[in-house]
Amino acid sequence: MAAGVAAWLPFARAAAIGWMPVASAPMPTPPRDKRRKQDGLIILNVSGSRFQTWRNTLERYPDTLLGSTERDFFFHEESNEYFFDRDPDIFRHILNFYRTGKLHYPRHECISAYDEELAFFGIIPEIIGDCCYEEYKDRRRENAERIQDDEDNENSNDMAPPDMTFRESMWRAFENPHTSTMALVFYYVTGFFIAISVMANVVETVPCGISPKGIRELSCGERYALAFFCLDTACVMIFTVEYMLRLMAAPSRYKFVKSVMSIIDVVAIMPYYIGLVMTDNEDVSGAFVTLRVFRVFRIFKFSRHSAGLRILGYTLKSCASELGFLLFSLTMAIIIFATVMFYAEKGSSASKFTSIPAAFWYTIVTMTTLG
Amino acid sequence: MSTVRHRPEGLEQLEVQTRFSRKELQILYRGFKNECPSGVVNEDTFKDIYSQFFPQGDASTYAHFLFNAFDTDHNGSVSFEDFVMGLSILLRGSVQEKLNWAFNLYDINKDGYITKEEMLDIMKAIYDMMGKCTYPILKDEAPRQHVEIFFQKMDKNKDGVVTIDEFIDCCQNDENIMRSMQLFENVI
Image (cartoon, chains in turn red, brown):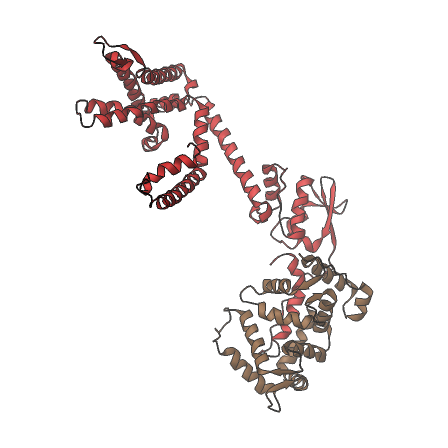
């Protein structure tokens, strides 16, 4: 029952006259109220700021500190008031809760300080009014994440516990390269090879002069095919060794295999092995060429080396639902307009829209204002 | 939000008109003003407040009848004076006055007679308010049966309606009802 409505209890009891004449049995007596004494003012002294309210206002919520006999522990005989050594600014909101029945969260207050005050006065945060509840939940979540991040950073910067197994120390070396020189060397070597590999992929396609037989321009990849092949093999070997080592050292192999970085690693080295397996099969060489595109994913291995790239990844992940909705609504619009265009031009024989999918390209290009 | 602001008559006048003491009027007004800052209760707020006391059933029909009974000048809103006058009769009035007020509640169209239809409406409203949590579980024809019992008891000249005199007479002779009336003394 809401706080203020308790004052209407006499009215509710009086309204019982309505069914009294029609009741077939005498009415039961109403319970006697325990508080027959007169309502009085209570002075609450919070660190010097005096708040005054009716005793009944506080007793609306008997399961909080102020509403129950727990407040007697804070009674100060000399000044005949209740003294609390807490923050008066936040206390104002808590007292307003008793008065109006709604708890508000002030935006300028720190969320942990507010939570502490609520906990002290025995008020559960779930009763925060709808007007302030979202803000409160958001701030709380942010705070929890910040604390979690701080803990993680602290954990990783701690001194190594002395008795770690070889596997654990290897994993620690992989995750945090600043822990030992070996880890740092490994970190830079892998970074170097990633860069080499990506640059090789790029340089492969640059035209490199006329071939000795003099017919057409050759790309560097075709001219120095062996050199590039050796370079590619070396890089892939390093990446494979790195992946195997990480897999071995991971505390939870299943979790490691599912993680994004390991999938990128796999995708980066798979084209090479698939290429080894099916080199001379002409039918699938087209597919093989497409597979080489995946080699460019090696560039994403830099995420381990760059915190900024990881943050970009997290950002995309956190707004994945919004991006997904954007994609979905674009698709809907494309389908609608392509259909409309197709049927609009169906009559004309010179129409380029032979089917609805054929109209998709036109629609996409027009909607994105590419033309 | 209503912009109508209504200030009640002075405390002295209300003290004279009702049978409440000064302190009691102060407490009543503070509760009233807390829930209705504009100074008047309209029917929706009235129903709201009343249903908070009876969450298990649908109290809105009964609250509607109650509202009409409190709203003595029939202007669609209950001011503090109406409220406190009604309470004064119900809690501090004589048995005659209380029975009079109850008759007024039952007589929906205020024509001086309670017909079977009016009684049935009231009965259904009361049953709705009690909800499904009664023991024993009430059947659907229970209101109608109850109305029949009521009319058999109250309607002395069997003309199909209950007048105010029949009502007051019959209630004063009924022990159960008299005993129940005494319970109102200590409500506030």
